[in-house]
Length: 268
Ligand SMILES: [Ca+2]
Ligand SMILES: [Ca+2]
Figure (cartoon, rainbow, N blue to C red):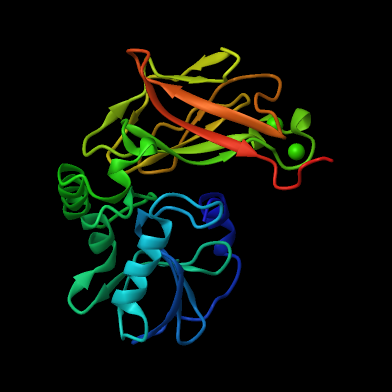
């Protein structure tokens, strides 16, 4: 799912079948990825659940909740816009099952955080309220280390496509605002364990929205109606392709979140 924002532009050039009218869920891979009886894959809207590979805390619980609520059941898809598919042909859709919104059920159980991909026309207030209740009740992910700050790093691409020196912006991470209000990044820093750090700009991330943070040079995109993008403006790659760790600090110098990168193909 990490690439679908950049691939949205491509999706319009391909022709995919019309989404099914009355689908049944055949199976699900994890908490937010499902397969319908016609073979269509769905990336669930508005929520991001912990990954199974590499395993993250509460990934299996999220998978099992989605399975219990949807497997073999007829569902309604909540589609947005004219092009409901990503670059892989997956439907981006909310799911209504037995009168409840699956994304809200996952949030209510603390098995995911609000995750908004612009443009967004859906009312996100009930989603944020469900998230707030799960936090207050100390459920699921909200008990774990990576969800104690204002931001959560949802992906970390330390190894750019091709030669990183020729593609500094191919190094990037996606970071979500996991609070229920806006977060301004001024004073926040992106840092390495070596102490090298980069200041984040005066950009406001609405609740549940994400920011893509690229290593190289570029013009920040600060309009939340589009994907928010900021650049660290380094002329050279920042992240080690074998193993590295990103640390985000807030304006008080407190660690907000960290994420490790480890090469999937270790050199002998
Ligand atoms: Ca790199
Ligand atoms: Ca590379």
